[in-house]
Length: 454
Length: 57
Image (cartoon, rainbow over all chains, first blue to last red; front, top):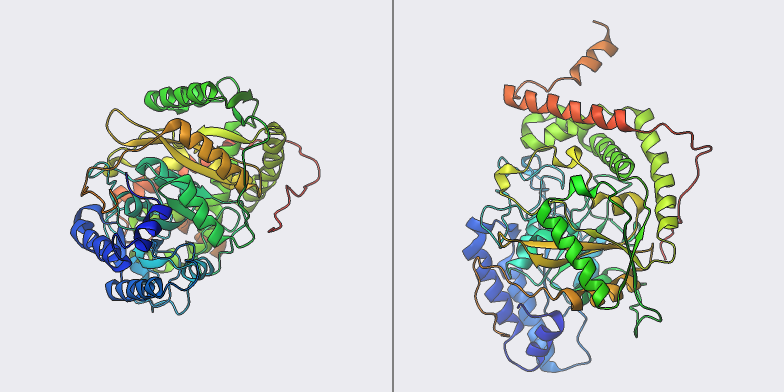
């Protein structure tokens, strides 16, 4: 099992290895695995090692307490600005772009907390077009199984954290792009409440649905990073005053047709295990799943087409086939349909809040299917059936993904918890309780090697 | 063809450079979008209202 942030910082303090050792080890792993895993678009070896040496010096000086992310390496999705590095969006259209002059707000906060930015994580083209084989960098692959989908669009974020190519990653999530890689790669990821994190310096995709957030190895690591990203955040201390109450869909809610048998079996098993552990699992009547799907898909497709449509029409050849196809399909949505979807969003959000009254969270699978081969991912997979991840983007609720079990094919499956707006602290606390019950301790086999902590 | 008509037809097809396979994929996408739009429930919701507060705390 890979070490937590706390364990790594203890190792640094006690001199088990230096920060430079750890950064050099991960950089060597990136070099060795890139042709297979394709986790990164770019990385900066010299800058990362120089920062690691400075942080080792500070440790040796022994002045004061360590910053919360001192010596912790982070990959940053390549639609988020990192000063001195090109924000490519994993797109040929940005091949001549100059390096970013300043860090995005979320990157500034990571650096101020001691994080070492290793490089730019691979992603779907502008977080919307992939997995695609006609982009500047091949699609990231799942460290659990070569050639398999690691989830997206923060694909390289999931791959880099699961592959021990960094300790955590910064991703974005417009329809599940933090939580799907977390689910498929056996990780924990948070999509915070809409608006909780400023998005200055992040490429816009959908103004209504865009979020940024962390992908990490555990709930506690994820919370540590969220606390850095969100300065007003206060973790919850002590146990809950009452048994946790987790809602699940009443009756079928359309899941019988949606979930693949292995995921349905996993989801039922998770509910049983949580109930046995004293977490109250309550079936509740939720807003119509198809209505949630239709509203979120229409808003996303229309807003993304608005942002990128003119550029794609003007420079068609500069974009990947999947991206440009999706964009130009989205252009067909008329204003009246878009506005109807926006109004539906408000009503569905209110209905969801009412349905979850008295509950700590809604429990859902992290994905309807187990990860499959990259080449089999359909261009319009998110239009063909309800996307369970997109619900929290539509309603703006915080949502935490965490791993639950390995499939028969040895790729991870996971669940997600949708909390109440601005109540990330309760969500993390519940997430830790669920994590203790589910106990997922696997590690991918590709490029596996014992960590110096083990 | 008038200018508005030309614009409309232009957005029903992909620009030159797209392969027949890509054109077919695009047409499939259009059908999926059409199905989503058809599934929109045009219920009478009354006056448009704001949802839960989105103030950053």
